[in-house]
Image 1 (tube, rainbow, N blue to C red):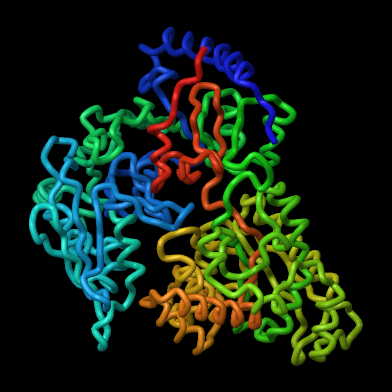
Image 2: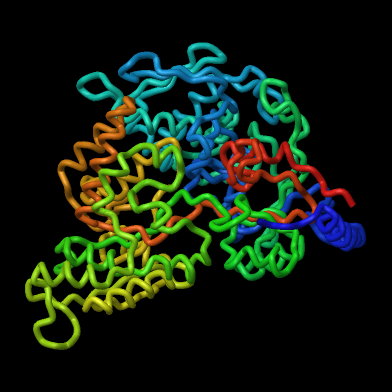
Length: 598
């Protein structure tokens, strides 16, 4: 456990703040966009490069601090109806106060809005704004609008505070996917109808609306744009923010400014973090524990001990099952059995991940809500922990996959087992992981050459199926998971896409898995859910279309308490997740922060 005293923190903070205060006061007039250090929460690892726009419908905003709609949506400027909390897999009220299905078939949903919510221009939020947001996303064919029309037929305003959402239903009248509609509640940024109409008026087409910079935006969030260039992004608190009402947070967030220096790389961000110039780091920092154990820095992770953060996603090796040799399940499973995961954990992740011995492999992440969704005993005989060279060799020998010409490489059906495995150049932990996969495979007579192209080439390769073995990640914790993650691993129809960003990149086919996944989209009975998820994992562990290399946090969360303290930590009773004080219910952290006393 960390052993730091408040005396150490206070002394360190006083020294750093004194230096920082001098710098700010002496050069504030000269440094554009500068803000008082004791009013500013600084970030690293989120924003890379200059902002392109403030438009949630844009496909290329490059504005991560403001527009980030992943498993937990970032709500500093734009807000969603609800907030996702990965700790309990629940949705918490934000602009919406409550939601419910209208019937057992989930053919329609009713959402009530918080009557205190209002826009940054002071006008009230109404159901018409919510409806307009959806309608304009569909009209402009934003990527999110296109996606959601598969699940939402329409929205309408029942009254100013009530929205009715009509589901796309099947022949039986049941919603085709109720989980994706629930996800919309915490993912879709709500925009003002009047502002959208203004933007439409100055654009020549719906397509042009997606290109509008929206730098005159109207939003509901606690912050608004203050300054940005190629060096820094700064938001300033909206002191008229509606969330200070007793129906929501009851106060304003503690930091007046949110800032993110645009660093040239992880090393520069780490240096600034160690010096107390960054408060919240979303970077992967190798051997993070050394910052407090050896350097005596006031640094905190969500968990005091390894793995330090909550793992929610599973970076994996994907096999192209249409490639000769890899079409044999014995070859795929042998590679997976032989891989030394403990070495990956130690060298690539510096033990910032639970092991597969601690959390036996499935398609589920290590969280309690997901681990409760399947029969653990039913999968024991199918799971492997790795570095099982003898077992992998025996599997191949029994299948008649042997080295017939004495060159040290086995053949399957006359094809030499020699493959190329790829992931992007510069992704050092992934690069190291694939090198370990290749070294392990060599010990069982399978040749794997690693290939690390630019990220754009890798993206082209995996979306077109132009690979043999490829490393890629999957979605983390969300209201749609583990359903959507299982689809990414197994769903056959994804392989029909000419350009496939959705999943099942290796073109695996299993009709039973497809049938179960279609049923899961609308299933709510807990016993049936457990039955389905157990069977899907049996299929996955038997056929091995891919295999996880590690568990990994969706967001790394490391904080420096030089200036601010009160950050959420595991078992502190706050129920605030480690989503960097910005995403989903993690934004609740901003209301608990306090300045470190000098």
